[in-house]
Image (tube, rainbow, N blue to C red):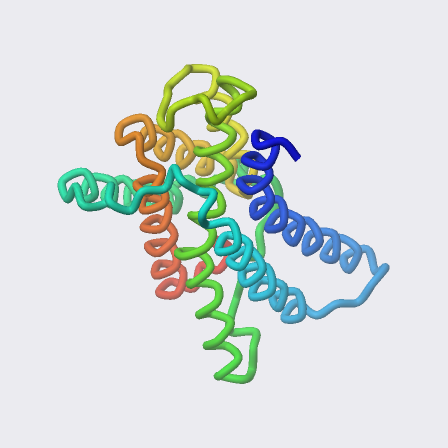
Length: 231
């Protein structure tokens, strides 16, 4: 494998594995709805810890390849504070853009109350929150704003500086990021703002922070309101 292909591979594999689990989950739900198979909702919930751990292991395995991530960027406190505010803004937009015509399909979300065992309920919730704030932001930002944003500028994306702006790359990644999520327009708003963070800071770590703050805010909101469809 060439160095360029390897660089793309290590940034795409965690995302691909995560999305494969999502696809498997949705396929099982579709087959269950049609009466082809019988599967409990809580059994499908068990896929989340598996994919979270697997993706986390992949990120750890290839951590030395992600040289574009610099945690020292977070030491710039004024910028970091602004990025955190952007993450909260994305959360606010997300919960107010739950329009029915912006949903690819009716999301059922993750409802921990379906577990009768309190310890299992707490454990699954912890995995859900932990994955949302500690794994998903790293995995997604590596794919969207490290790989794809640069790849749409030049197929040899390693030559493109982090945070390099072109209008086509901005539009393409914003649209595709929206299509990845159930709430498409909310997803596009999030993708646009995370892209702006990237262009403004030229820091992938700051993008990950913004994404993590959004997911943490959303997790707290869902747990407080019981609006599980946001999960």
